[in-house]
Each structure stands twice: as C-alpha cells, then as structure tokens.
Image (cartoon, rainbow over all chains, first blue to last red; front, top):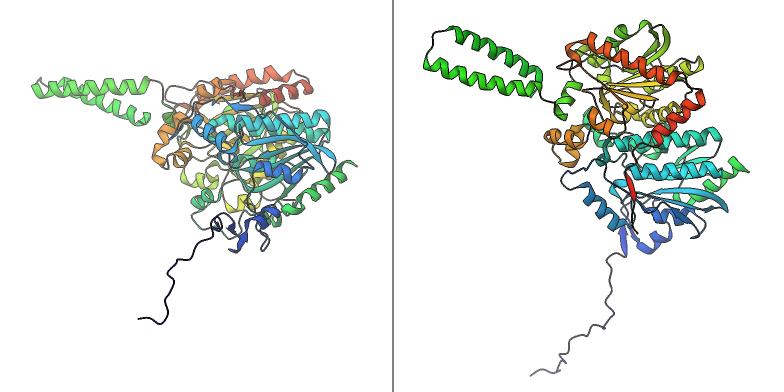
Length: 280
Length: 318
C-alpha cells in the first residue's frame, strides 16, 4: 500500500489557448535568421537583420511608393485574346485563367495614377506572380498607354519592373512590345517628361532589354537579379559556373549599368528627390 | 526530312530505276521497280509540298544560305566597311558600312554568320555583343546625320548570352537601339534574311518596312529553347516551331512583317544570285514608298506601325 495516493487526473489543456506558430515566422533567404513575420511586414519585407529584400507583389508596391490609397488604376480590365492559340502542356488560356485567379489581376501589370510626395505620377507596377511577370500584348499596351498619358499630361512616369522577360506564349507579338513601349518612351524622352525605371528582383530578358534600361534614372533594389540572358542560359552557353553575385544589382552598379542601388525603405524618398531635381 | 537529302535520294533512286529498266525483266526487278517508284512518289510530295515550320527553321539556318557579306556584292556597289563602336571594340558578328544601291548612297548594317567553322567562330555564329549593337546604332546615327537611308539585314540566333555581354550591358545596348531607331529621321528598310532571333534581331529591326525572305523565321525564342522550357525536352522543337507561329506567312497574318520575298525552289542557298535579285526589287520598291515622305510624317508612320502591333486583347467583363 502506497503512502500517498496520487490523483490521476490528466492535465487539462486550456481550451482555445493552443499556440499556432506556422506562418508567424519566416526564415530569411539572405542570412538564414528566423524573423517574426510581423517585423518583416512592418519593414516592407526587408530582413531587419541582414537587409535581404523579399519579393513583394504589385499592390504592396503601390502602397510603398504612393502617398495614400487615393489613386486610380487604368485599363485594369484589359486581357489577352491569345493571338497564337498557344498550347503546350497546358493551354495558354488555362494559364491565364489560373494566374488571374491567384493574383486577382487581368495581366502582369497595374497602372496607377496617384501622388508621390504630393506630386502627380503614373506608376506601372509589375506582378511577378502573373506568369513570371512576363510581357505580352497586354503588358506592352498598358505600359504604352501609361507613357502616352504621362506625355500628354506632362506627368512623370515610374515603372517598377519584376519580370522574366517577353511572354513566350505570345511569340513575336510579345517581342514587338519591346519596340512599342520603347517607341512611346522615345517620345517622352524627346519631350523632356521624366521617366524613372525601378528594377526589382528579378528583371531579365526583353523587359530589361527595353523599358527597364531606358529610364532617365535606372535604379534598383539591392540584390536584385538583373540581366539580359538568364543565368541558366549563360551557364549552358559558356559551360562553366557563374561567379557569385553575377547579375546582381551591385554587380551592375560596378559595371556602370545602374545609376544607383537604393534600399526599399529609402526608395520613395529617393524618387521624390529625383523628381524635385527634374521638375522644380 | 531535310530537303537536300530528299533531293539527293530522289536522284539516286531515279538512277537506280534507270539501270533496272534497262536490265532483263525478272519478277524481282519488277518488284524492286515498283518499290522504287512508290518511294519516288513519296519523295516528290516531300519535295514539292509546302515546308513545315520546322523545315523552314532548317532552311533559314542552312550553312550555305547567303549571309550579309554574300549579299553585299550582289546588291550594292562600292561598299566600304566601317568598324568599331568607338568605345570598346569591333564586333565581327555585326557588319556595317556605306555603299550605293542602284546609284543612291545608303547605309548597310546586319549580323554576319559564317559558312565554315573558322568563319563561324570569327563571327561568333552571328551573335553580337553589346559593342555590335552600339556600332550598329553609331552607323545609323551617321546615316541620319547625312540624310542617307538605312538598310538592315537580320540573321542571328540571338544576342550573345555570355559573361562579358552582361558586364557591358547587352540589355542596355538593345534597349537603346529600340528607342533610337524609332526616331531616326531617315527611311529604314529591314530585311529578315535568315534567323530572326528575339531581342538580338529586333535591335536592328525597327523600321518603316519589314521584309522577310520566304523561308526565314522570326521569333521571341528558338523552338529548341521553347521546347526545353515548356516540355522540358529540346527534342520537341518541331512542335514548338508550329506553336510559335514564326514563319513568314504567320508573321504577315499577325501584322508583324509587310512583304514576303519569294525564294528560289529549294531555298535561298540554291541560287544566291536569284535571291539577291529578288531582294533588290523588293528593297527598291519599299524604299520608293517611303523616301518621298517628309521626316515628321515618316516618323509618325513608323511610330504608329509599332504602336499598333499586337492589338490582341479585349476588355473583360468585370
């Protein structure tokens, strides 16, 4: 017989007090540190420890750069009519439908008219989540219209790129968008209406080789992959590994291909200052 | 099937049938004769039917297809090459210079591939680096300064994808050409003579008239590249060539090219002289169409031409 009798009641879990931890913490791709998601969000998705810039979507970008929510979007209901009837493993139409569902956008760019530092601007913000931010006829048309409006009203244009390049599923039609947008930018350039190009991770292919490199200022976020050919294509062509840091913003800066590398948290202030220099 | 091989086989079978026909009749010879005549019929269809897109890709890349340096003596008089971009080096994959076209002074610019291994290496397989595009633009500006029309000839697998190209700003070089070609106040006539490989082709292909040789192709990506991305299998290139709508007929239907220059039977490589004559006629006509225009009108038309490319969208019901 035991000296003491033990009450065999199990410990009760406090109802509703289960702690959920998934999604609250994020591992930084830059420094491997574990960051509290709220800290990351409060810092515009820049790692507070190492400064690594996480990718952000097109809408977040608008909130980051524009003064407030008082902006209007243009042409947000334009969608492709699939010029080539393109089908590979999936049909292009299906790919479009899926991308439209997940991003709640009709194509890979948002055109907004709003203010930055109190000054009216047109801002095109690309959505990498929409078929890799690729440029087909719709992206080309929307950016061209934005440039034409900016020219008409003599209002500065800002394009934030995040794109894998021209959209293969629209073939040569998407290739021609490079010429089309560049033509509109040529008119702005001749007329002296400012255009600032902001390059973010990643900006490659036909987008880099057209409007992204044609700004009065070409500025990039730190650590962004920027190039003409993708790193895989280059590796296959030259059959050797690429050096660390190749095609990153800092690499382009040293080679004279960017005007500045500007952290996300300072981007808006930088743009306000630049526009002041151009226009006041 | 490769048409050159088909033609060889055709001739071979014809010879065999001839010898068989002369020999004494035997059941075996009779049977063989029948077989051969069936094969011949099949090959004849292969040779005379329209080429598939993939066959056109092969014709466009044919090693004996005339390249710019073959065309120049056939189309122009008194060509003087101008080298270098005046800031880094001279890119042998891009050739340019001044010459006379039917008595008129013109600027001639284009990519240059090679016919044999040594030439191919020298010309980097017709894949220019940034300095090549910068040389091209420098020459175009020179032409504009002295009011001379510009002829460009496009034949490239694409702009060179390499470490040095990236370091020197391949993307910037191409982008600048696109922007500045739109506003050059002299006529620009573009001819796609072989492969029109993506941005590397477009960087000298913004103009007032876009001509394309019947078997040339023009695309945002090579069929092999497309196949390895979408099907993860480069052997699906045949299918990709269909899907990309990269042939001359497709491109005219899409409103991307203006005129198709017919090639001699079998392709441009069969008869360099004949294709050059045909190109010459088309160039003259195209130049005549635009050379009388006042500069501003010319630029407005060029702007509208590219502005209206790819109007393939609709307004969604939201």
